[in-house]
Amino acid sequence: MLQMAGRRAAFRAWLFLLVAIPLLSAGGRPLLNTLRPLLPVEWLALLLFLASLLALSACAIWMRRQSGGYRTALLLAGWMIPLFLLLPFTLPVVEERIHFLLFGAFGFFSMLLFPLSVAVMVALLGAGLDELWQWVLPDRVGDWRDVGINAIAGIGGIAAAWLGSKR
Image (cartoon, rainbow, N blue to C red; front, side, top):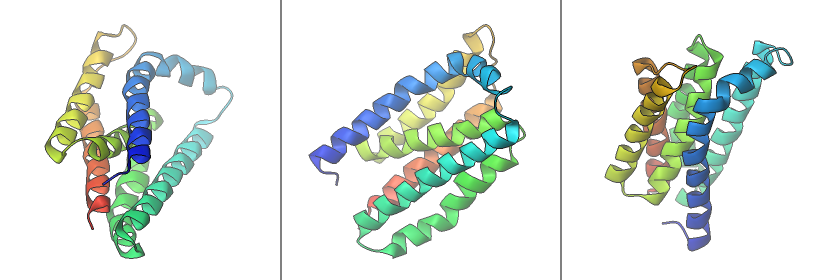
């Protein structure tokens, strides 16, 4: 179980994501349109890859500390690397890759804060509500495919936190 300071940090990270996800849905497109002339798509993809790699490294370190060894971290890396590093780069739209970072982290921190059933419900609700929010925005379009991407990433984050915290 998380110590009180760790629980507070997890709550802050979860709250940050809870606010950042709808804000990025509303303002992410103009932000990306501003960045595109300054940053080629290949560089943006590389930055997302590095951010994902950093997040996975932090997760692996956390898992090693939780389990007291490298076995759990290495075992989980066997499915986390394909899910969070390789799968996103098969997506044709670079922006969709951001979903794996945001919703994977959202699922991870949800699992650290809530029981498994609540964490799954929160992650799936967040996946659907984000696309519903985009559906009502004038310059965005909600998409069932994105709900699936969000849900897969959230469940992957939940699985990482759940398995990583088992002793």
